[in-house]
Length: 78
Image (cartoon, rainbow, N blue to C red; front, side, top):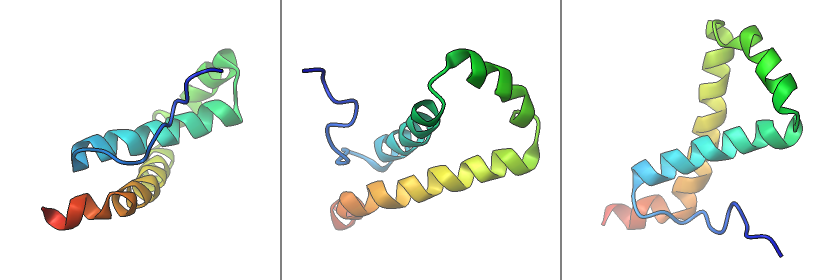
């Protein structure tokens, strides 16, 4: 059995949670379009497009909300 790329949503810090949110967004793209070649070709369609970049930020923010909730907003602010 292969090791899971997502063993837990629990992280030590908000910064680690944000990094996980970015990874979730990237994995969604990779799983949706598994071809490295096609993803590389499509990058030029969005990497200089402000609307596309803002949309990507919204996706990461949605994932960060999920991770933050899973971490009780980092243990109720310790």
